[in-house]
Length: 154
Image 1 (cartoon, rainbow, N blue to C red):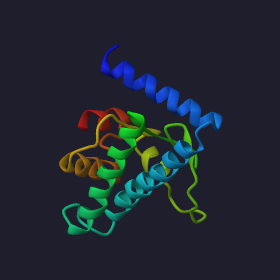
Image 2 (cartoon, rainbow, N blue to C red):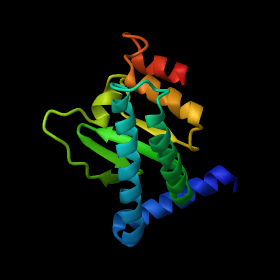
Image 3 (tube, rainbow, N blue to C red):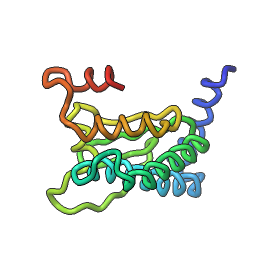
């Protein structure tokens, strides 16, 4: 069995156990790390409204994103962030994010680009992550095909 198939099988089994409640510890760990990952990602996107992407304020949260993303990948394989209306899921585990009424959300930010989620197969390098934040925080590159333009740019 190749490495990818083995990783996918492990992920499927781990998530199934977590969903069935057999491994409450795993579900809790995915939820905790997933919440940190989503909050960091959303926070960095919003930070671009007040700071230039090269500002030193981005260094620490970017490093933390890389660490949490890598920890999740070590645990699950690929990391899937999926947004559905105001809800966010990390690898099928719902992340409970309290937010102020009428405030934007990660789903709102991604919807600008007609994207409902992100998948990470490896933690992005600092330069890759910087580019991702720049693209997601900016206006769509194409009004007609925002998702296709996003994919091309990435």
